[in-house]
Structure formats: structure tokens, C-alpha cells
Length: 372
Image (cartoon, rainbow, N blue to C red; front, side):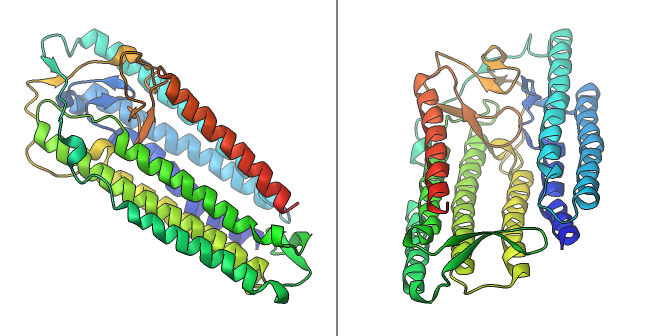
């Protein structure tokens, strides 16, 4: 069973993530390459393309090697235990990916300085004052479905309490054997609903970030850019709602196994992995089809190249950390990848970030005590 579970982990989770990391330079906006602002028409430049392709090849080659080593080590050296080498493999891969990114970032900075692409091209910033009035997000009423799932999970635990065995299984090893039991109590049965409640607030926070993040409109084709960004936010808000429901369903499934309704170890082990795989696959498909800021969505005409976005490289440390004290925005689009990042020059951004980390720590401590 360990071999099967390890294979599923790599096929369903590890491989798609490695693929999306390799594709990151291709789904980022064409006006930004490895955290460096460039004119869109430069995206197809052979030297720029070579930097992207080299990064992709390095990620696939060395990331694949790390994955294979982790797989072999987990299966052959520790055949009966939980995953041990996989977390170290993921950590090593993250270090490698960032190293490959930094190499591409430095190459792009040198190439931009040498070519002086932006010297004779007008730079503008476009703001749409009606942008927030557009339909950018799925309805927040979808979050009511979260409440239904939470109440159903809680109600199931309370309804089945008298029939639940005195000892409840909490952890399984890769052979499907229970490795930790806890005594039956109402406190234990509140673990799943409490986790679902925390996930709900987390998804609502992400949903709000998507709606409030700074708009980024291409000055060469503002109408097209606005529509792309609107669709981009709408799709990711829908994904956020979907992902949250999937995770809530996962905790609901946990409640089913805790109450003894589901006892088959294969089902208990594979269902969470399949749910994770669905979330990862959806994120990959959405990233590839949508692109950063909606840049891969076919809307309207292409850019003329006669005007470009204002060059703000000085505010992007290493191309990934945005620090602009003059910008009131708390969240802006990433320059490498898909999604948003903080404006680290704003104190409130740090308050929200640190506050979120504290809440996560408190949640982990609280749930650990529930199931301790």
C-alpha cells in the first residue's frame, strides 16, 4: 500500500506542481519577465525566450531528479512508515526553483540594461474609476453553502455520538493501520467543524483580497485589459469558493471515519489524496488557461506596442517583494506566477500578515488540544 500511496502522491500532487512551476514564466504577464518589467513585444525576443526555456528545462530536470530520489528513498528505505523523505524533497525543490528564478532575474536585469528597451517608449499608468463597479467576483452568498456543510458535519457527530466506539482512530500509516487512537469525547467531534470554520474565514479573507487588490491595466489596450482582469478575478474567486468547499468536504469525510461510518483503510487513505489532486489539477488548469491578470484570455485586440506600463522595477526587490511606500494598495499582482502579493511598505499589510500567522498557530494549538 505504501508503494501505491507514494505513486499516487507523486502523480496527483507532485507532478502537476512541478509542471506549473516550469510553466510559470509562460503564464506570467508578457510585460514582466522574471520580475523585470519589459515591453510586451520584447517577450518574443530570442534572448528573452532562451532565459525562459533554460529556466523551464532546469526545473524539469533537477526537480524531476529530486522527485525521483525522494520517491525511491521513501519506498525502499522506509517501506512501512509514513512519508519521510518527501517533505525534504519538496523543501529542496523549493530552494532549487528559487535559485533558478534568481538566475533568470539577474539575466533579465542585465539584458534590459544592455538593450535599454524602455528608453524611447512612452510609459503610462491607466486607472479605471469604474473598475470596482464591474462584476468581478462570484456571489458572496456561495459562502452560505459553507455553513450548511459545517452544520451537517457537526450534526452528524452529535447524532452518531452514542454509537461511536469508545476509541476513535485519528491517524493511519501508509499500510492503512491506525497509529493513534483517542478516547471518545465531544471535544474530539468538534475538531472537524472547528477546522471547517477556520477554513471558511480563511477563504473569505482570500475572496476579499481578490476583490480589493490593485488593478493593473495595460495602457496600450485598456478596455481589453480591464475585461481580462475582471474575468481573471471572477475565475479565481470561483476557484476560491470551490477549493474551500472541497476542503470542508475533506474534513466532513474525516468526521465520517471518526464516527465509524467509513472504516475501509483504502477509502480513508485515498479519498483525501483524490480531493487534493482535484484541487491541484483545477489550479493548474486555471493558471494555464487564464494567465496572470487574465493575460491568456482572448479578448479584443492585441497591443500596439506604442506605449507601455510605467517601469516600477525599483519597487520590486528581487522581482518578487513589492515595497512602495507611495502606493496605498495593500495587495498587488505578482510579477512571477499567478496571484497576488503584499505591498510590504504598508504597515497594515504586515498587521494582516502577522495576524493571519498568529491565527494559524492558535488554530493548530487549539485543534491539537482537541485531539490530544
